[in-house]
Length: 100
Image (cartoon, rainbow, N blue to C red; front, side):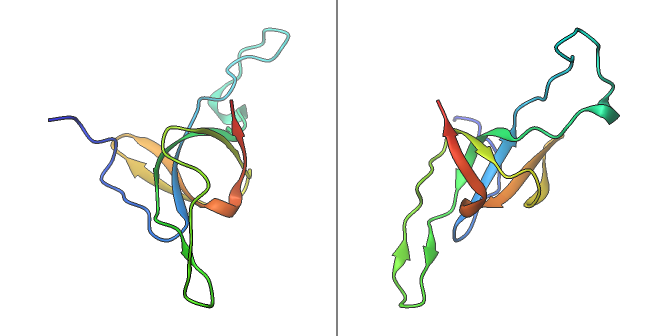
């Protein structure tokens, strides 16, 4: 049996994102302590909800899908603990771009 990534299944238009590691060094080679690192804004989508429902009751499908790397807004979302890591649960509207 394949191991599941998480036991969290987003609802509506929410997306579960695993942030990718931020830079550990500056361009000049200075190693940054954890407290000085910026939160990453690029992550991998681990799960997506089925989509939102508009005021007329019609389903608005998701544009993003599991496995894509995305650029998301710096502030917002909710941190959730998956095993020992902090992931984010964000709304699809907070995804700004797909990173190829």
